[in-house]
Image (tube, rainbow, N blue to C red; front, side, top):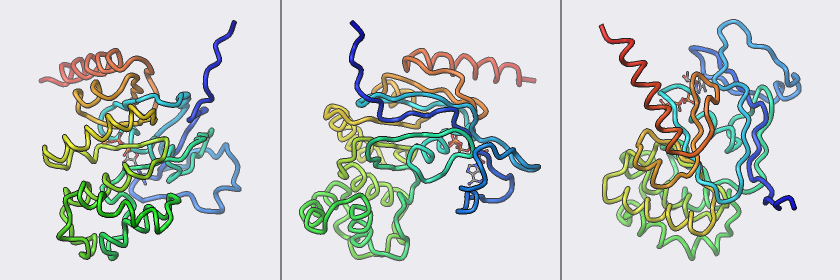
Length: 256
Ligand SMILES: Nc1ncnc2c1ncn2[C@@H]1O[C@H](COP(=O)(O)OP(=O)(O)OP(=O)(O)O)[C@@H](O)[C@H]1O
């Protein structure tokens, strides 16, 4: 008898996106009607191409790859912050993204207003945010700056409040980019405990990290991106071993 697998929460099918070098580029509304098979123009390069994978609910996936190899771009595509130029990514559940240090927060708004805005955008009512607000601020340990404009916070403080909000959105999929590396050790430990709790509740995790310990602690499966291609998809230990082996040989070949 075939096993009844649950419906996947993320399906990436031949996903690709290209950027223009030396210029920030976002797809505009007109691009949406320009057809799926836009070819790369001069000065453009594929940041990701031919990426296909399926994620089941509750999986914890670590994304590895050297700097600039497309990890954050992949998370942004899953979060719906960027649109693909080729292929598609279908995400069937809500996503809580912690993908940039700003967490999508607005610099001129206070910490308080940003908490209400971000939680509101993810569907929480004002009453629900009222109930969660003190817990969020206490987790972030930012009681003293609740009415300070977000832009005046330090990098570590920004990550604290972003994580505190994002981790309480109760979305089934959590996307975490390298940002946690910015927090101090005590806060990182708190975040790790929270991530463990969310995984135990059955949430799906996508974690981009250069920290092997974090990857092996939280993730069971790894995706290895190299020059914008998905070169390996498998158990996290095997993926890390392959990534390390590739990098050792790369650093040896560049020795004088
Ligand atoms: N908006 C953009 N416009 C132009 N190029 C971009 C844009 N965003 C990313 N890139 C480029 O796409 C490539 C992949 O970037 P990405 O941030 O996904 O890499 P990464 O693997 O997350 O790197 P890191 O480990 O340093 O965080 C890089 O060459 C980067 O410069």
